[in-house]
Length: 452
Image 1: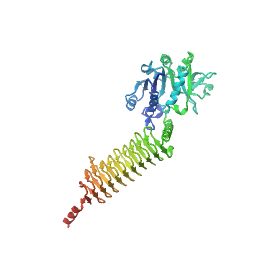
Image 2: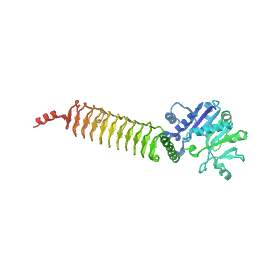
Image 3: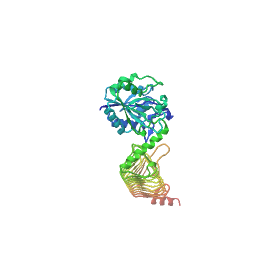
């Protein structure tokens, strides 16, 4: 069976009380419409059109150019929206599937089942239906004594008897291609809209088969306000977390673990409570993350420990341990075996293999070699009020506690600084400097003799 898909995403979503188009509101780190697009593409359609209206330019900027956009300049209902896609979709496939950009919990398995049911029944229209706990406000599915679908009635137009039906319309529909496009223009304007569901009445009147397939209510939840958005966030987070646990990741408390859809995690990693993994983050095997950790747009190797810390746009190689209460900022790169202790901050810096920065230190715009010891309270003074300046520390350097590295400055291989040293000029390899400003022992003694 060949397939065309129309995704309706033109509405503003006034219930969101937002300037942002409804379908761009984020769900587990991604615009909700992206989930619908991804599920639709899994069905391998011949052609897919996204019907946009309010905030059309914003949608194009976020979703990119690899999509066929159709603009619905006047929002005159679902029938009118699908009609806008006729030029792109008509005659392209046997079946047309209509989806909605605000139903991100729909799965491709459910849609495949609907399409199979549509084909088996040789239907002109197939409805995806569900039974909510409270059907108030939904269009009721009408069936005759044999169970055959004979219509849909909107809640505000339904009789008391019709309201007793708890089976309602999700809005997701399959159509026989030729039948759909030949009937869309026959819809009548009602309440200033053209309702796509009115096609059911036309099909029944012509004796065309109308089928219905039921699904779980959560899959077709339309997110038209922030209360439903929060409910969907919890459901999506549960899906994501269960997927990772089944893939070999331990979540000690899934309810307090927040993993966005774009994150990747290796087997045997353990995620502790109140951890947030966001954006383009990838974590290797056998790590221990959290508790109380935020990692965003970062790469973490295998065998790492990151405890009660914030990691943003950083690269962390294998066997690194960070925290608690550390902050790795944009541009940080920690090589294999680096240690960052409590209250350490690193920004736009490279720390070589085996380097240790125990606690209460700041490194910015710095390049450190291998096996450097960064004493407590060490700071790179990298900003002069106008520009940032680099600091270079070569292999095997020992930086004493409270060392101030006044950039631009270079400390050579194997050099040492005394506690409280203020380093204002380059230190040659192997030299020991101390004091304010920092000098080698011989220079300090000569200076002291001149002052006597």
